Length: 239
Image 1 (cartoon, one colour):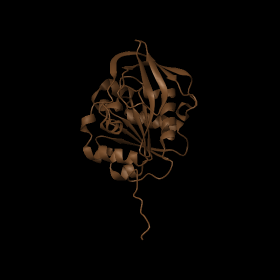
Image 2: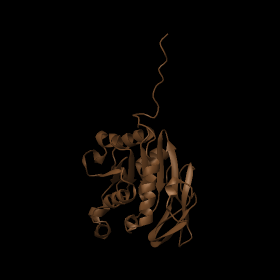
Image 3: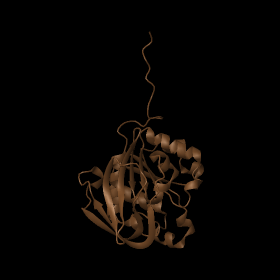
Image 4: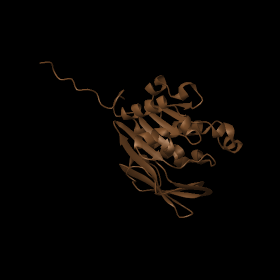
């Protein structure tokens, strides 16, 4: 299974506080977690916004079974052709794991067909992640509930279509609740959205979070070859 971990790599270069938490970038921390917990059959590479073709050219995507996406500061900088290329690849069967502020990425909004807006505030409060589908593969090895000591607060209403499956719900010290682990299908592709992971906190170093992402990558992997389009024409026999 070939995984590409995509990140903007903007905060890490711009904000010293973020660089201190993620000296090699959030994308590298996420990739390391997948390597540690994903299994020997998982190959992981990284891509960033500042690379040629914004890290997601046809060659890269053609060699990707599952793409993870973290974005926040530069959603609007992602080019139209990159958005189209990624969405077409997902509809053709590539898995997509969208993390934290990636809910507002152009890719996720295009695939959801909604604003993907939510309530938020950032007071560095505790988040509890509750497993509400313990038999789901993404919940494998996770406790009934785990705590993230400090995290940005997300809250309902989360403007996405009703998830096909809901794996996690989060509650926060201020009283908010949020659908933090949502599964969707688009065309032949599987999508998982997981909300923990603000750049100001070391969330992607936490073992439980790494386990969720590694499980999600395996769940989202294609069940057959990834097609250039989700549907291929049916050719009738000639008369």
